[in-house]
Image (cartoon, rainbow, N blue to C red; front, side, top):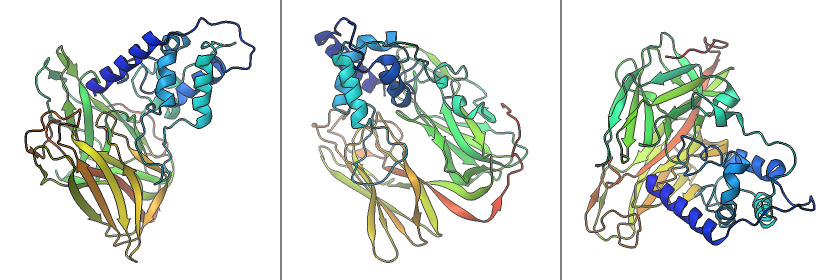
Length: 417
């Protein structure tokens, strides 16, 4: 993550040096302005990452923040580098598609060409930009109902290899809760990712699976209307953390905030993964293939996909094989980037009848031609360190309940643990 941000920052600074912004001059009033056009675009697509304490290398909240970077921003949006989105548009219909429209790109380009005019009036950044608790969803959903936080801070020493602890966080819940949205926060100077899973009161992984996660390029987990993820009373949350040390000692006290379902629940959400723990990528292999599958044992509907690999990850594809013999590709990520691990959320859940087989196919590049490759001369095995590899095709799916549920917490107030 840090390497990616530094490279992007270098690109931006380089282009800013060679293409300075022209002095703003009074315009005809027909060109786009920051207040009326560009500010709203960035509020919708950019400010989640480009704000204090987040992973992007500069703030883009105000006109004063943005104007020095205008030529660089033009280059990044014209070449479709930002906002990051790596899915092949030929497959899938995703509700969280972050790509700028042609009209939005044109507005940014014309704004820069006109000298980046500020415009009349005031532009107000979105509410999450000034959220004191660090949770982006607070501005839209209000304060979270629960915040589950590490009881002790974790000291990440300066330098050295990545650290991958598993930290258990008790919920102290005295009743079951159904979650409609969750957001994982931490000290992003060192947190590369944190996958929060549910351990049931019996000490086993709950059937719900993963609750939520934070990875580069992802802000939150939100679930379709009428569905929720169940956390039973007495459960514990497992924080699967990946720390990438910085050049100074940092204490992290990660947390996950949850917002409860505010209506009738018709579907229970589950999270699962297609994984290949037997990876054995040979030295200098440019196109190692890995496959896995999951068979649905009941009627369901897929709500999202989230590919996960490390530095040698090259591409990943999700394909359905239906019981009637049909096959359908739902997601293809032809140029995987570990630095931006995006969740691809379907605009509408994709129905899958019982017996449908979900196939995940991934390729890895362990050759010297891979600029991210730590060492092409070694055999690469499964492991949690970024210099190892993982093939994990995460996905969420919902299953219809026999009877709708009206949760007991409906209308309950906010509480922080």
